[in-house]
Image (cartoon, rainbow, N blue to C red; front, side):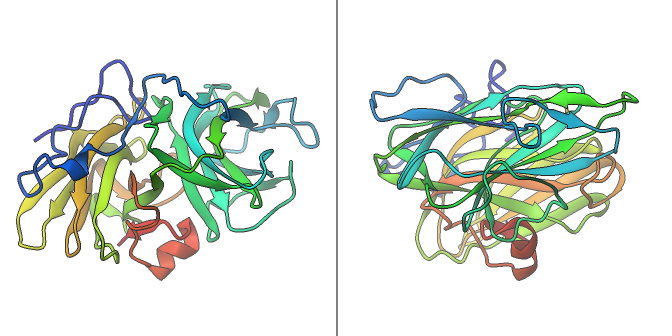
Length: 326
């Protein structure tokens, strides 16, 4: 089956229209699948303790001023923040803060394993061995609102990094203050979720595939998938192979770099299952961070936290602990 995004709500949030390939015959509609989910449609939460905070690209030494983007192609920058909340909070929503669309390529928001210097800015090589990806945006992206029984754990004692990828071809510096608004609550949800990388870094040719076989011995509830490739990307599939050999499509849809849809899915990955992610490109491609290089990632939202991982040591050194890459 082919996946169908919500035509009016595409992007980094999980669309309110279910992925047509999400619920397969191996699982069916069960009480377990009626748990929390996510949507890109604006939501109102009945939670007086919830507060929202902005994390934006900014000038050195002044968070109120935008970041000056030079003309260096494919410029990656890390902006480090200490959170304004105390103790452990739980993220319920992520809102995209749009800056200068002429220069912003994409951004990723990470939770680190330790503290850092609030407001610091440094060049990035794209590796975050101690960072757990929390959310991301690319062209066409929108907001993410989690159901009231789902949240992402956001400790107040660790730092957070906004990694931006800028590409400025204007011939002169341009300002940008793109970023993210995170709304958190101290109230722990029933289900604590994570976002994991599925796919592969091994790209050479017009197709690339990676198999995720989670280490978890408990059921994993998948509630969202966001494909990510670059300008040569044309199509992505993510196929579940059940322990008994049965096949089921988690995702099956064309890819457009300028309209990077996300999909709301409802299915479970059981012990012994695997997921094969396959990316197709318009011409031979190789892995890399640059716009003209390629990637093959299915960012997958699920709970319980960090259960959709396989402990790949090389991938973990680059992308952090929340990977299920081959």
